[in-house]
Each structure stands twice: as C-alpha cells, then as structure tokens.
Amino acid sequence: MTVTALAKRCGVSRSTLLHYESLGLLRRPPRTAGNYRAYGEQDVARVQQIGVYRKVGLGLGAIRAALGRPDGDAAAILQRRLVDIDAEIETLRGHQRAILRLLQRSHTLTRYQMLTKDKLVSIMRAAGLTEDDMRKFHQEFEKAAPTEHQEFLEFLHISADEIARIREGSRT
Image (cartoon, helix red, strand yellow):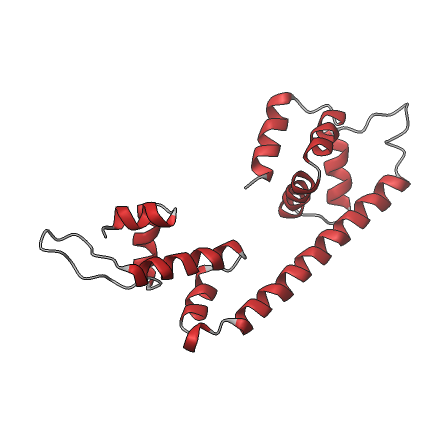
C-alpha cells in the first residue's frame, strides 16, 4: 500500500509517516515500478504500535528504544513512563495545595474584593509557579471539570475571547 493509504488506514498524516521513516521508527519500504513506497501489513502493525506508545505519552526516543527491544519487551520503558506520570501528578497536587493555601490566606475572595486574572496570576507566581505550571493547572482543570473551569474563568472577569483561547489551549 502507498504512504497515503497507510496513513489513512492508521489514522495519521502522511507527513507523520514520512517523519517516522526519517527517524528510523518505520523502515524504508521497497518501491514499486512507479517509484511509490510499498508498505505491508507489518508496517501497519508497527505504526499502530507507535500510536499506542504515543497515547501513553512516550516520546519518539523512548518509542524507538521500545521498538528496538527484543520481542517488543517495552516493560522497563513503560514502567519509567508510569513513574514519570506519578511524579507529574504529585507536582500538580502540590500546585493545587499551594493555590488553596494562598487562597485561604488571601482576602481576595471576600465579597468586597474581586479576584481577577491579574491577582490570581500574581498569587500563582508568588507561589513559585511558572507559565508552564499554570498551563498544566488549566489543562488539568479543563480535563477534570470543564464546566467549573469555564465558570472559574468567568469569575475572574476574563473576556469571552480570552476564555476561549485559554480553554482551547488547555485541551492540547
């Protein structure tokens, strides 16, 4: 099958397959008489396996290592990914605790003072959160409670356009 047919069958883009080929994740296939790449069922299985690894958050380097293991034994690589995910979750929980502590100490939530985006960003920065940490906060908030995330952003008096940008960026 051609690169376009393989891409369609595996649900990835043609350029993704060519990228995988350039990185050595996918073998360089033989060519047809018309100089088209000729992929087979083994290639389909390989691209599908790459897709599984991508879905669990492995980077391309780790995927290359996993695919290079004898008999596809990627357990050590997957266990390392699990440890990394646990660390990421604990970091996010730490961020949640820090924000809650800041909000409990802060008088910005009284009915006489409004919590604004600028005040919240200032509080989060004072707690040591980076822009990436704040993005992760929004990603987790959006994933766990999208309706409440919307309400929270509205509570901060953020414009509808900016809310849409924040929420869209949180979904990637």
